[in-house]
Amino acid sequence: MDNNSPMLVLGIETTCDETAAAVIERAPDGRGKILSNIVRSQVEEHARFGGVVPEIAARAHVDVLDGIIDRAMHEAGIDYAQLDGVAAAAGPGLIGGVIVGLTTAKAIAMVHDTPLVAVNHLEAHALTPRLTDGVEFPYCLFLASGGHTQIVAVTGVGQYVRLGTTVDDAIGEAFDKVAKMLGLPYPGGPQVERAAANGDATRFAFPRPMQGRPDANFSLSGLKTAVRNEASRITEITPQDINDLCASFQAAVLDSTADRLSVGLKLFREQFGAPRALVAAGGVAANQAIRGALLDVATKAQTQLIMPPPSLCTDNGAMIAWAGAERLALGMTDTMEAQPRARWLLDANATAPAGYGKTRAGF
Ligand code: KG4
Ligand code: ZN
Image (cartoon, rainbow, N blue to C red; front, side):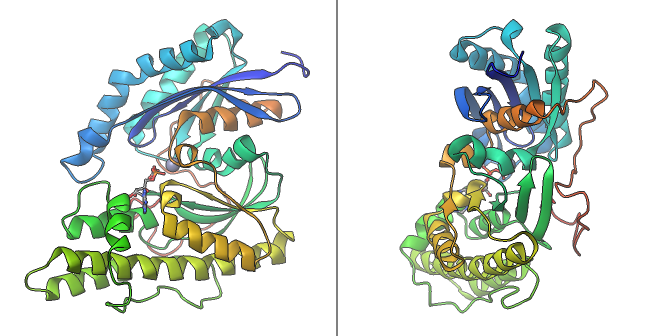
Protein backbone atom coordinates (compact mmCIF):
# COMPACT_ATOMS: atom_id res chain seq x y z
CA MET A 1 0.00 0.00 0.00
CA ASP A 2 1.36 3.45 -0.84
CA ASN A 3 -0.10 6.74 0.31
CA ASN A 4 -1.80 7.39 -3.00
CA SER A 5 -3.91 4.28 -3.27
CA PRO A 6 -7.19 3.68 -1.49
CA MET A 7 -7.14 1.49 1.57
CA LEU A 8 -9.38 -1.58 1.91
CA VAL A 9 -10.32 -2.63 5.43
CA LEU A 10 -12.50 -5.45 6.76
CA GLY A 11 -14.36 -4.66 10.01
CA ILE A 12 -15.88 -7.14 12.48
CA GLU A 13 -18.45 -6.32 15.18
CA THR A 14 -19.56 -8.81 17.86
CA THR A 15 -19.71 -6.83 21.12
CA CYS A 16 -23.43 -7.19 21.79
CA ASP A 17 -26.32 -8.78 19.90
CA GLU A 18 -25.40 -7.97 16.31
CA THR A 19 -23.00 -10.10 14.30
CA ALA A 20 -21.64 -7.82 11.61
CA ALA A 21 -18.88 -7.57 9.03
CA ALA A 22 -18.17 -4.93 6.39
CA VAL A 23 -15.56 -3.80 3.92
CA ILE A 24 -14.85 -0.12 3.48
CA GLU A 25 -12.53 1.80 1.19
CA ARG A 26 -10.73 4.89 2.44
CA ALA A 27 -9.42 7.24 -0.21
CA PRO A 28 -6.09 9.04 0.35
CA ASP A 29 -8.01 12.31 0.84
CA GLY A 30 -9.84 10.73 3.80
CA ARG A 31 -13.14 10.04 2.12
CA GLY A 32 -14.80 6.75 2.84
CA LYS A 33 -16.98 4.37 0.87
CA ILE A 34 -18.88 1.33 2.11
CA LEU A 35 -18.32 -1.64 -0.22
CA SER A 36 -20.39 -4.07 1.85
CA ASN A 37 -22.09 -4.00 5.23
CA ILE A 38 -23.72 -7.20 6.54
CA VAL A 39 -25.53 -7.15 9.87
CA ARG A 40 -27.28 -10.10 11.45
CA SER A 41 -29.35 -9.17 14.48
CA GLN A 42 -29.91 -11.72 17.26
CA VAL A 43 -33.11 -10.01 18.43
CA GLU A 44 -35.15 -13.16 17.87
CA GLU A 45 -32.82 -15.33 19.95
CA HIS A 46 -33.06 -12.94 22.90
CA ALA A 47 -36.67 -11.70 22.61
CA ARG A 48 -38.23 -14.39 24.79
CA PHE A 49 -35.81 -13.52 27.60
CA GLY A 50 -36.66 -9.81 27.40
CA GLY A 51 -33.00 -8.83 27.02
CA VAL A 52 -29.60 -9.94 25.74
CA VAL A 53 -28.35 -13.20 27.28
CA PRO A 54 -24.52 -13.16 27.06
CA GLU A 55 -24.00 -16.93 26.58
CA ILE A 56 -26.62 -17.12 23.84
CA ALA A 57 -25.06 -14.09 22.16
CA ALA A 58 -21.56 -15.59 22.17
CA ARG A 59 -22.76 -18.90 20.74
CA ALA A 60 -24.75 -17.17 18.02
CA HIS A 61 -21.68 -15.10 17.01
CA VAL A 62 -19.60 -18.30 16.72
CA ASP A 63 -22.28 -19.94 14.58
CA VAL A 64 -22.65 -17.19 11.99
CA LEU A 65 -19.56 -14.95 11.98
CA ASP A 66 -17.53 -16.84 9.33
CA GLY A 67 -20.49 -16.83 6.93
CA ILE A 68 -21.12 -13.12 7.51
CA ILE A 69 -17.47 -12.29 6.79
CA ASP A 70 -17.55 -14.39 3.60
CA ARG A 71 -20.64 -12.51 2.47
CA ALA A 72 -19.08 -9.13 3.24
CA MET A 73 -15.95 -10.03 1.24
CA HIS A 74 -18.02 -11.44 -1.61
CA GLU A 75 -20.32 -8.41 -1.84
CA ALA A 76 -17.33 -6.09 -1.78
CA GLY A 77 -15.90 -8.09 -4.68
CA ILE A 78 -12.40 -8.40 -3.23
CA ASP A 79 -10.28 -11.21 -1.88
CA TYR A 80 -8.31 -11.37 1.33
CA ALA A 81 -4.97 -10.68 -0.38
CA GLN A 82 -6.25 -7.20 -1.28
CA LEU A 83 -6.99 -6.17 2.31
CA ASP A 84 -4.83 -3.43 3.81
CA GLY A 85 -6.00 -4.35 7.28
CA VAL A 86 -8.55 -6.17 9.41
CA ALA A 87 -10.27 -4.42 12.30
CA ALA A 88 -12.34 -5.92 15.10
CA ALA A 89 -14.18 -4.35 17.99
CA ALA A 90 -12.05 -5.44 20.95
CA GLY A 91 -14.48 -3.99 23.52
CA PRO A 92 -16.24 -2.68 25.48
CA GLY A 93 -18.98 -5.27 25.42
CA LEU A 94 -20.05 -8.77 26.35
CA ILE A 95 -16.74 -10.56 26.68
CA GLY A 96 -17.75 -13.86 25.01
CA GLY A 97 -18.76 -12.07 21.82
CA VAL A 98 -15.72 -9.79 21.87
CA ILE A 99 -13.41 -12.85 22.08
CA VAL A 100 -15.13 -14.42 19.06
CA GLY A 101 -14.70 -11.32 16.88
CA LEU A 102 -11.17 -10.42 17.94
CA THR A 103 -9.88 -14.00 17.63
CA THR A 104 -11.36 -14.29 14.15
CA ALA A 105 -9.73 -11.00 13.12
CA LYS A 106 -6.37 -12.19 14.48
CA ALA A 107 -6.64 -15.41 12.47
CA ILE A 108 -7.39 -13.50 9.26
CA ALA A 109 -4.56 -11.03 9.94
CA MET A 110 -2.11 -13.85 10.57
CA VAL A 111 -3.08 -16.06 7.64
CA HIS A 112 -3.20 -13.21 5.13
CA ASP A 113 -0.30 -11.28 6.62
CA THR A 114 -2.24 -8.06 6.99
CA PRO A 115 -2.23 -5.57 9.90
CA LEU A 116 -4.66 -5.98 12.80
CA VAL A 117 -6.47 -3.04 14.38
CA ALA A 118 -8.19 -3.61 17.73
CA VAL A 119 -10.92 -0.97 17.73
CA ASN A 120 -12.77 0.50 20.67
CA HIS A 121 -16.47 0.05 19.82
CA LEU A 122 -17.25 3.51 21.20
CA GLU A 123 -14.53 5.06 19.06
CA ALA A 124 -16.18 3.46 16.03
CA HIS A 125 -19.50 5.14 16.90
CA ALA A 126 -17.61 8.38 17.47
CA LEU A 127 -15.87 8.36 14.06
CA THR A 128 -18.87 7.24 11.96
CA PRO A 129 -19.93 10.82 10.98
CA ARG A 130 -16.56 11.21 9.28
CA LEU A 131 -17.42 8.21 7.09
CA THR A 132 -20.98 9.35 6.34
CA ASP A 133 -20.61 13.13 6.27
CA GLY A 134 -16.89 13.89 6.27
CA VAL A 135 -17.28 15.90 9.52
CA GLU A 136 -14.07 17.59 10.59
CA PHE A 137 -12.66 17.75 14.12
CA PRO A 138 -13.57 18.97 16.67
CA TYR A 139 -17.18 17.92 17.14
CA CYS A 140 -19.50 17.02 19.98
CA LEU A 141 -20.83 13.47 20.05
CA PHE A 142 -24.01 12.38 21.79
CA LEU A 143 -23.92 8.60 22.00
CA ALA A 144 -27.13 7.04 23.26
CA SER A 145 -27.75 3.32 22.95
CA GLY A 146 -28.82 0.39 25.08
CA GLY A 147 -25.40 0.22 26.67
CA HIS A 148 -24.04 3.76 26.50
CA THR A 149 -25.07 7.34 27.19
CA GLN A 150 -22.25 9.82 26.79
CA ILE A 151 -21.44 13.32 25.61
CA VAL A 152 -17.93 13.30 24.16
CA ALA A 153 -15.67 15.94 22.65
CA VAL A 154 -14.03 14.33 19.62
CA THR A 155 -10.90 16.32 18.80
CA GLY A 156 -8.94 13.79 16.73
CA VAL A 157 -8.53 10.08 16.06
CA GLY A 158 -7.87 8.57 19.49
CA GLN A 159 -8.55 11.92 21.17
CA TYR A 160 -11.73 11.93 23.20
CA VAL A 161 -12.77 13.92 26.23
CA ARG A 162 -15.85 12.75 28.03
CA LEU A 163 -18.01 15.71 28.99
CA GLY A 164 -20.93 13.78 30.44
CA THR A 165 -22.14 10.25 31.11
CA THR A 166 -24.96 8.44 32.85
CA VAL A 167 -24.50 7.71 36.53
CA ASP A 168 -26.88 4.73 36.31
CA ASP A 169 -28.93 3.41 33.36
CA ALA A 170 -28.27 4.14 29.69
CA ILE A 171 -31.16 5.90 27.91
CA GLY A 172 -31.94 2.91 25.67
CA GLU A 173 -31.81 0.67 28.71
CA ALA A 174 -34.39 2.90 30.45
CA PHE A 175 -36.67 2.67 27.38
CA ASP A 176 -36.26 -1.12 27.39
CA LYS A 177 -37.00 -1.41 31.11
CA VAL A 178 -40.07 0.83 30.92
CA ALA A 179 -41.34 -1.25 28.00
CA LYS A 180 -40.79 -4.44 29.96
CA MET A 181 -42.63 -3.19 33.06
CA LEU A 182 -45.58 -2.16 30.87
CA GLY A 183 -45.67 -5.52 29.10
CA LEU A 184 -44.42 -4.24 25.74
CA PRO A 185 -42.12 -6.57 23.73
CA TYR A 186 -38.32 -6.36 23.50
CA PRO A 187 -36.53 -4.27 22.28
CA GLY A 188 -38.66 -1.66 23.96
CA GLY A 189 -37.42 1.65 22.54
CA PRO A 190 -39.44 1.62 19.31
CA GLN A 191 -42.49 0.21 21.18
CA VAL A 192 -42.41 3.01 23.74
CA GLU A 193 -42.03 5.59 20.98
CA ARG A 194 -45.05 4.14 19.15
CA ALA A 195 -47.20 4.07 22.30
CA ALA A 196 -46.09 7.59 23.23
CA ALA A 197 -47.33 8.91 19.88
CA ASN A 198 -50.88 8.07 21.01
CA GLY A 199 -50.51 9.19 24.60
CA ASP A 200 -50.95 12.31 26.72
CA ALA A 201 -47.50 13.54 27.73
CA THR A 202 -48.94 15.82 30.43
CA ARG A 203 -50.93 13.19 32.33
CA PHE A 204 -48.06 12.12 34.61
CA ALA A 205 -45.63 14.68 36.01
CA PHE A 206 -42.43 12.64 35.98
CA PRO A 207 -39.14 14.10 37.25
CA ARG A 208 -36.63 15.68 34.86
CA PRO A 209 -33.46 14.07 36.26
CA MET A 210 -30.34 16.27 36.73
CA GLN A 211 -32.16 19.31 35.29
CA GLY A 212 -30.18 22.51 35.82
CA ARG A 213 -27.03 20.83 37.13
CA PRO A 214 -23.74 22.42 36.03
CA ASP A 215 -22.21 19.07 34.96
CA ALA A 216 -23.45 17.27 31.83
CA ASN A 217 -24.24 13.91 33.44
CA PHE A 218 -27.41 11.88 33.01
CA SER A 219 -29.46 9.80 35.42
CA LEU A 220 -32.37 7.61 34.38
CA SER A 221 -33.06 5.21 37.20
CA GLY A 222 -35.18 7.60 39.32
CA LEU A 223 -37.37 8.35 36.32
CA LYS A 224 -37.75 4.65 35.62
CA THR A 225 -38.81 4.07 39.25
CA ALA A 226 -41.32 6.92 39.01
CA VAL A 227 -42.90 5.24 35.98
CA ARG A 228 -43.06 1.94 37.86
CA ASN A 229 -44.71 3.61 40.86
CA GLU A 230 -47.38 5.33 38.77
CA ALA A 231 -48.06 2.14 36.80
CA SER A 232 -48.48 0.10 39.97
CA ARG A 233 -51.02 2.61 41.30
CA ILE A 234 -53.35 1.87 38.38
CA THR A 235 -55.46 -1.17 39.29
CA GLU A 236 -56.53 -2.23 35.81
CA ILE A 237 -54.12 -0.80 33.31
CA THR A 238 -55.63 0.02 29.89
CA PRO A 239 -53.86 0.54 26.56
CA GLN A 240 -54.54 4.28 26.96
CA ASP A 241 -52.84 4.25 30.38
CA ILE A 242 -49.82 2.61 28.76
CA ASN A 243 -49.77 5.20 25.99
CA ASP A 244 -49.98 8.04 28.54
CA LEU A 245 -47.25 6.53 30.72
CA CYS A 246 -45.00 6.14 27.66
CA ALA A 247 -45.71 9.67 26.43
CA SER A 248 -45.05 11.19 29.87
CA PHE A 249 -41.86 9.13 30.26
CA GLN A 250 -40.58 10.08 26.82
CA ALA A 251 -41.32 13.76 27.47
CA ALA A 252 -39.21 13.61 30.63
CA VAL A 253 -36.36 11.94 28.72
CA LEU A 254 -36.56 14.63 26.02
CA ASP A 255 -36.43 17.50 28.51
CA SER A 256 -33.61 15.92 30.46
CA THR A 257 -31.63 15.13 27.30
CA ALA A 258 -32.05 18.66 25.94
CA ASP A 259 -30.92 20.15 29.25
CA ARG A 260 -27.93 17.83 29.64
CA LEU A 261 -26.82 18.34 26.04
CA SER A 262 -27.03 22.10 26.20
CA VAL A 263 -24.75 21.99 29.25
CA GLY A 264 -22.47 19.57 27.36
CA LEU A 265 -22.23 21.94 24.40
CA LYS A 266 -21.46 24.83 26.74
CA LEU A 267 -18.63 22.84 28.34
CA PHE A 268 -17.41 21.91 24.85
CA ARG A 269 -17.27 25.56 23.79
CA GLU A 270 -15.37 26.56 26.94
CA GLN A 271 -12.73 23.89 26.40
CA PHE A 272 -12.46 23.46 22.62
CA GLY A 273 -14.17 26.44 20.96
CA ALA A 274 -17.11 26.14 18.58
CA PRO A 275 -17.90 22.53 17.61
CA ARG A 276 -18.11 21.75 13.88
CA ALA A 277 -21.29 19.79 14.64
CA LEU A 278 -23.41 18.04 17.20
CA VAL A 279 -23.39 14.40 16.15
CA ALA A 280 -25.87 11.82 17.40
CA ALA A 281 -25.23 8.08 17.31
CA GLY A 282 -26.62 4.92 18.90
CA GLY A 283 -30.00 3.23 18.62
CA VAL A 284 -31.84 5.88 20.66
CA ALA A 285 -31.08 8.41 17.92
CA ALA A 286 -33.60 6.51 15.79
CA ASN A 287 -36.36 8.02 18.00
CA GLN A 288 -38.06 10.80 16.02
CA ALA A 289 -39.01 12.82 19.11
CA ILE A 290 -35.42 12.69 20.35
CA ARG A 291 -34.20 13.74 16.91
CA GLY A 292 -36.48 16.78 17.16
CA ALA A 293 -35.12 17.68 20.59
CA LEU A 294 -31.54 17.37 19.34
CA LEU A 295 -32.27 19.67 16.43
CA ASP A 296 -33.55 22.31 18.88
CA VAL A 297 -30.46 21.98 21.05
CA ALA A 298 -28.11 22.24 18.06
CA THR A 299 -29.94 25.27 16.67
CA LYS A 300 -29.82 27.07 20.03
CA ALA A 301 -26.10 26.30 20.29
CA GLN A 302 -25.59 27.61 16.72
CA THR A 303 -24.17 24.42 15.37
CA GLN A 304 -25.36 21.84 12.84
CA LEU A 305 -26.88 18.50 13.77
CA ILE A 306 -25.47 15.47 11.99
CA MET A 307 -27.11 12.09 12.28
CA PRO A 308 -25.71 9.16 10.37
CA PRO A 309 -28.55 7.10 8.83
CA PRO A 310 -30.18 4.80 11.43
CA SER A 311 -28.49 1.69 9.97
CA LEU A 312 -25.09 3.25 10.74
CA CYS A 313 -26.19 4.65 14.14
CA THR A 314 -26.91 1.16 15.44
CA ASP A 315 -24.16 -1.45 15.70
CA ASN A 316 -22.61 -2.45 12.37
CA GLY A 317 -19.33 -3.59 10.80
CA ALA A 318 -18.76 -0.52 8.61
CA MET A 319 -18.13 1.69 11.63
CA ILE A 320 -15.49 -0.77 12.91
CA ALA A 321 -13.83 -0.98 9.49
CA TRP A 322 -13.85 2.80 9.21
CA ALA A 323 -12.31 3.35 12.66
CA GLY A 324 -9.71 0.74 11.70
CA ALA A 325 -8.95 2.62 8.47
CA GLU A 326 -8.64 5.95 10.30
CA ARG A 327 -6.15 4.38 12.70
CA LEU A 328 -4.27 2.54 9.96
CA ALA A 329 -3.87 5.79 8.02
CA LEU A 330 -2.06 7.18 11.07
CA GLY A 331 0.08 4.05 11.45
CA MET A 332 -1.78 2.88 14.54
CA THR A 333 -1.89 -0.92 14.42
CA ASP A 334 -2.06 -3.64 17.06
CA THR A 335 -0.18 -6.85 17.72
CA MET A 336 -1.42 -10.40 18.26
CA GLU A 337 -1.22 -9.58 21.98
CA ALA A 338 -4.28 -7.28 21.73
CA GLN A 339 -6.69 -8.24 24.50
CA PRO A 340 -10.51 -8.44 24.44
CA ARG A 341 -11.95 -5.99 26.97
CA ALA A 342 -15.35 -6.01 28.68
CA ARG A 343 -14.73 -2.43 29.85
CA TRP A 344 -12.77 0.12 27.89
CA LEU A 345 -13.02 3.83 28.55
CA LEU A 346 -13.00 5.98 25.46
CA ASP A 347 -11.49 8.80 27.46
CA ALA A 348 -8.73 7.15 29.51
CA ASN A 349 -8.63 10.17 31.83
CA ALA A 350 -12.32 10.08 32.68
CA THR A 351 -13.13 8.83 36.14
CA ALA A 352 -16.07 6.54 36.66
CA PRO A 353 -19.05 8.37 38.16
CA ALA A 354 -20.97 7.03 41.15
CA GLY A 355 -22.87 3.90 40.21
CA TYR A 356 -20.14 2.62 37.86
CA GLY A 357 -20.43 -1.11 37.37
CA LYS A 358 -23.90 -1.42 38.81
CA THR A 359 -25.69 -1.57 35.49
CA ARG A 360 -24.72 -2.61 31.99
CA ALA A 361 -24.29 1.07 31.09
CA GLY A 362 -20.87 1.31 29.47
CA PHE A 363 -18.40 4.10 30.05
O1 KG4 B 1 -27.06 1.16 19.37
P1 KG4 B 1 -27.99 0.01 19.59
O2 KG4 B 1 -28.59 -0.65 18.40
O3 KG4 B 1 -27.32 -1.14 20.39
C1 KG4 B 1 -26.60 -0.97 21.57
O4 KG4 B 1 -27.25 -0.90 22.64
O5 KG4 B 1 -25.35 -0.87 21.50
O6 KG4 B 1 -29.14 0.56 20.54
C2 KG4 B 1 -30.21 -0.23 20.96
C3 KG4 B 1 -30.98 0.56 21.98
C4 KG4 B 1 -32.05 -0.27 22.67
O7 KG4 B 1 -32.02 0.00 24.05
C5 KG4 B 1 -33.33 0.24 22.03
O8 KG4 B 1 -34.46 0.12 22.84
C6 KG4 B 1 -32.99 1.69 21.77
O9 KG4 B 1 -31.64 1.68 21.35
N1 KG4 B 1 -33.85 2.24 20.72
C7 KG4 B 1 -34.72 3.22 20.93
C8 KG4 B 1 -35.43 3.39 19.71
N2 KG4 B 1 -34.92 2.49 18.80
C9 KG4 B 1 -33.95 1.80 19.45
N3 KG4 B 1 -35.00 3.96 22.01
C10 KG4 B 1 -35.96 4.89 21.90
N4 KG4 B 1 -36.70 5.08 20.78
C11 KG4 B 1 -36.46 4.36 19.67
N5 KG4 B 1 -37.18 4.55 18.57
ZN1 ZN C 1 -22.95 0.36 19.92
